[in-house]
Image (cartoon, rainbow, N blue to C red):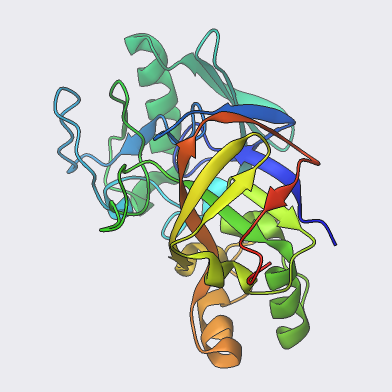
Length: 263
């Protein structure tokens, strides 16, 4: 059975909602264009846009702590840099994230929305060429920008184990694929795969945290995903990180070609 791309997502603002894509071009050494391009830093976070460095997600608003973020639906227009925020279908804030006034409006809205739950006032941060990835640069990587991939059969295996449906968007991945045996993606670590017209090297499994407890539909913590993974499978991984080694376009329905012994 062929392994194919079932869905593609980017997350323009770290911690905010996903945006589905039909197709996207991947470039060598880069993450998806506009993925985790912006973040909302806490008042106590020291981020130098002239010398950007990786910081842990606890320095920013995030679902692991701020589950009410899941109530918001955001859309980012790369051409205008306009971010629009809506709740229950009603637009509540907007601003161009490349302009100081737009950043202030967005940050002020989210500071008020999250209230005492966060160390405010918040501020929008970004730096040219920087992505606010959750994971530090892996020792076996040549870049600190990754593409995250999830095998939907592995999610299905977890669903069967716990007797509950699991929204794949809990895992906030870039690429979801179908047609592979559950958990085979762990065997790809250290190998190259072909994704559409791009090539990627799989670096490591993705360790899951409390952010996956949050139901993206209800903004409530209703499943302890890490505990369930550990209890039923002896690990707390879902999905893998990979780095792009040769650029090319990927699209929904494209094939993923993995090492023959592991596919």
